[in-house]
Image 1: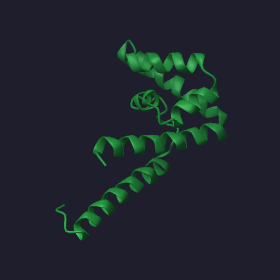
Image 2 (image 1 turned 180 degrees about the vertical axis):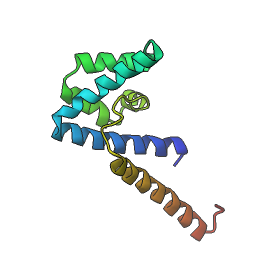
Image 3 (image 1 turned 120 degrees about the horizontal axis):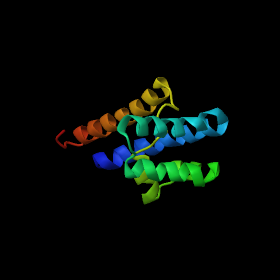
Image 4 (image 1 turned 30 degrees about the horizontal axis):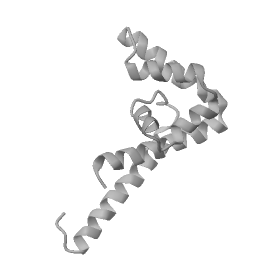
Length: 119
């Protein structure tokens, strides 16, 4: 598995956890819009990706947005790479997901080593 594939898998795991929290705690839906507004204030304008997210948040239902967060589609992968959903997961939740992907990486390296492949 390439580094990019691992990064994409970790991103979808993070965003699936975000989607789960959004389903449970409706007050969290304000966070992505606040993030976009904050970034616009800091930079004076939005990047094309943030403009796209702003439009998505304004024109799509919550279920459609959740679908984007959890989908394997190319569009979803691209959109997740510039996600305004930062701040929904706490540090412990993020660390748990990151740690699970580090363990997978080291486990694969160990298995290659056991089979006689170079690390």
